[in-house]
Image (cartoon, rainbow, N blue to C red; front, side):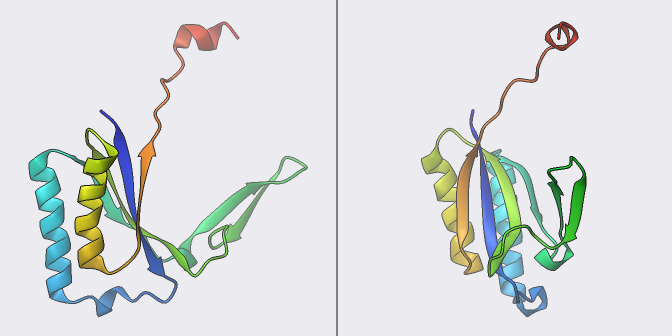
Length: 125
């Protein structure tokens, strides 16, 4: 069955302490509902983008580690859920519930899984 990433985008100046207790409880309730339905595989929030580190391979092969996200944008991923559902439509139905209670943009993407190479294949290279 396909897996989908449901991610929410928060503005750079997002202040989690400004969330009402009602909104927090609604998020917890949605998580309990997804667990009860057997679709939630993972869910979590992310620290602010200002805490991020980005690693980029340089032309000389060395890695450059910089503060903050690589992309320059006014919004960053603030939370994510991974759900295992039968279709994109079902993933969108779960995402709608989160978008309504959180007031932020929510994105849904299918996760592509590729089988891991077998040890036999790895050893023959």
